[in-house]
Image (cartoon, rainbow, N blue to C red; front, side):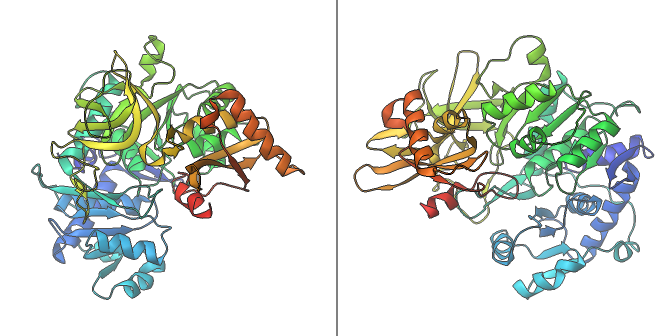
Length: 501
């Protein structure tokens, strides 16, 4: 199914229904479809149709949506790229995906031209597209037709682009929709008084794209945020009264720490996605807003894997500690370091087989990199286990595992313990080299308030850790920092901390 399908069908069913709200401007589904069609017809006119890799370097906006949908209509491969990328990052993104054409805004055009003289750089301009037809029916993709190259977070190195087909991506988000709705689609357009969904995550991130696709799939309009801001979110919820939110943990933290009054009473559940949600933050949010947080577990590479729904919570199926029950049409295997499946209840690396899996990384041999295997399974790079009810528990990331004196130590376990200390606002634990033990766990701690004797507090935190967990797991070194280094989507950059040592 073409990734533009749901937008197109809403434009045909209800052309006058508002599809997008952005900065107090509204765009009907028909207006969005016409914008996308003009972009698509323009792309065909310059030879940037089926199979051509199209770099999209725009901030989240209706123009970005029109560019993506226009590309999908004519079979171009959309490469949405982080608008905050610096020159080195941007050059790598365009080179690794073999982008031939880039659509950007006037402010960035000269910069991109300077990066690669062979790139065709197009400035998004409604006047440029105005002369092209406002109708452009989308093509019907085959299983091998790529629709999207989307970058992973890059928390442990250079960001890599996952290569995803139209049919794979449509399968994974429509499967999630079916779980949420309790029945498979297609779904009629929502009733006129149905509140819009808020797309808070950026559209260069699969989380933002999935929020948009989900809304259009169930026939809802969206409020598009160019950048997450807690004050704006509070204002949008008060004005539009959405009944659900999908946010990343960093966004949840900003709402927890929001200094003003905030009425989220219309929200019946909040889905946390994008990265691990620590238990302390979950409890603080639920205590303040009385809104339950549910989780959706997956990855850019594997698609949606497991999660809970509001219905699970109401009917008592939710299990504390589990990221969710494995979704229908998804196979999860827990394997040891040799790739052999382990018994239920035992920890191992999480491997997934699903219709929504990527084909691989652009320009990489993903089998040799041990991200995929010959049977088509993809790893999330996480460690966890399955229980007898197919509920999935995640205990850490394989690449973050610390091997201290022959013992395996999970940083997430230490981080949860340290967050219980009254002086700790946030923390990240990484492995650093050690002459005797090869590697030791070191904590980088953000304090709630300044402390005069930091050496004394560091020793206190080490002893606090030892009092809660086995001695061999405890942190052995502490550094205090003002804030944790994070990616543009809020993931902690542990590789940066490891470089600091």
